[in-house]
Image 1 (spheres, rainbow, N blue to C red):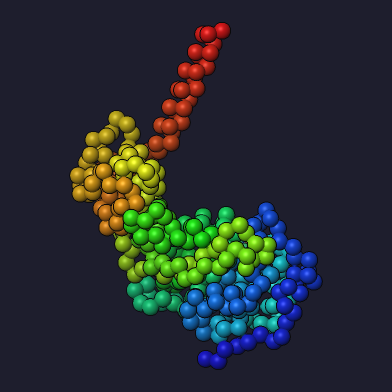
Image 2 (image 1 turned 30 degrees about the horizontal axis):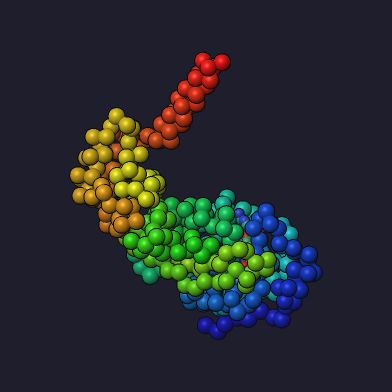
Length: 338
Ligand code: SAM
């Protein structure tokens, strides 16, 4: 299919000047004005010809233009900041029906609703020609990623149409954590959460100075393709809870983190969990493979099936109760001393 190009348009710099679109610090806005970089990001998404692309946080529309210059059939953009609407509408007119602009918060936007059903592919077949792309603020990208991974695990939202791929930017350190292998310093909860559900690749790094204004950090472009079969076949909230607890004490034996899954008087369950999973309680969490995480999650799941109250247990309430006890003791001592 022939690449469809946009007619000549004012540059992004001109649009920023024309519509006085100064970057807002509170929305962590850092714009990409270099079209070589926006083209490179779009290229990382794969073949877009005839496809549907959803871009989150288009801002003044640099990546959007590069998307429209591919043969993508339709591009939908979701932008929170109203100030960008006129420049995006200008782009929509030039795109002659190939661009839809939505003003809203992507965290509350039902993306599944705007995807054309005819592009759907069965989950176990090649991914559909549906793509999610975004250069989002760092404060939004990680919580959004966790929500998307949850939707992916239940094959809902954009994943009810098959294994929709994502191409997203993250602070370089976060991107490195997402792809981190075992035995590396960056290995963390996010590595496990991304890798058990997706094939995840750090494609390239954009130096901070390429953005306007320049953030203090570099940025990694990450590509995620959902796996046909997740490496841990258990409900997302359970895997998320176990991974969060296991990686709670990075420098200590994994036993210390796993312990926080259980009330103090139920340490018998902790022993049971290590015995059933065959994982060495003296491994450090960054040494645990996804296979070992899988066994830990299954052992925990078996316990929760038998004793449903265990899943609801929150050690933070235990910590809070301990804090209240400590504070009360200090106050009592102070009063007694007076
Ligand atoms: N894509 C543009 C670029 O690369 O030049 C802008 C990137 S800027 C880092 C992030 C964009 O996301 C801004 O336009 C900001 O207004 C938008 N944004 C921030 N939070 C958002 C949210 N919750 N929902 C939708 N857009 C959001």
